Image 1: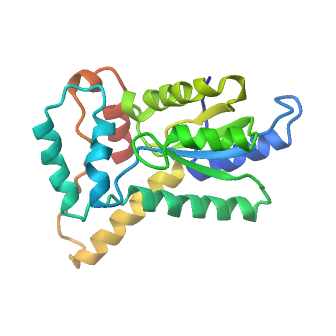
Image 2 (image 1 turned 90 degrees about the vertical axis):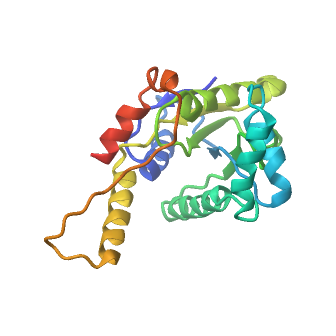
Image 3 (image 1 turned 120 degrees about the vertical axis):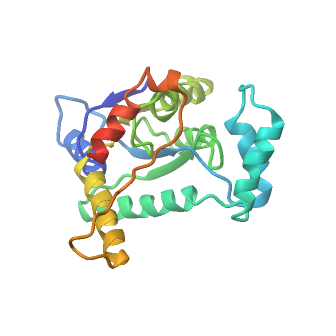
Length: 231
């Protein structure tokens, strides 16, 4: 069963949690022996687009014409979403930080909707005899699809492996972690500097987010967290 751990910083949350458990006998005799970066997934070629969208829309009553219309957006970029490449860069960066701190812990990469699929990755973990895994989900804000559904994914995909499946501990959403806020701030400052405007000029900054149904927004903290991060 997965549950949420309360940590305050994205990289630091991962690193400090591993280090803390390695040095603590009172909490557990089994420290984390792997990190799982868990994400949404995205196509990496034109042939991937339709199967990917079918995975995303599985079990939902969405007309096929609507799915084909969405596919056209991906085709404009040769069917390639940047998300998998960005996640591989994140894994390299996190692995480098862990190595600097002497943390020997493999990092696995799994997705909900496209390869590498979560079910396959859990199978790899079982073969490697992993017992306790720290999960870093790439969704910054709380919502059903951005948080709870990932917990359900972990539980569902673990069931076929029974007691051989590792225990998964999910790191909290990172919308207000200092590292995330600072990175956003620096990118905004860089963009403003590139505009070449004068110090006295007025400037409006717009923050965007996913469009989610109002029924979902009314039952989660997504909007509140987004406003806090923007503030």
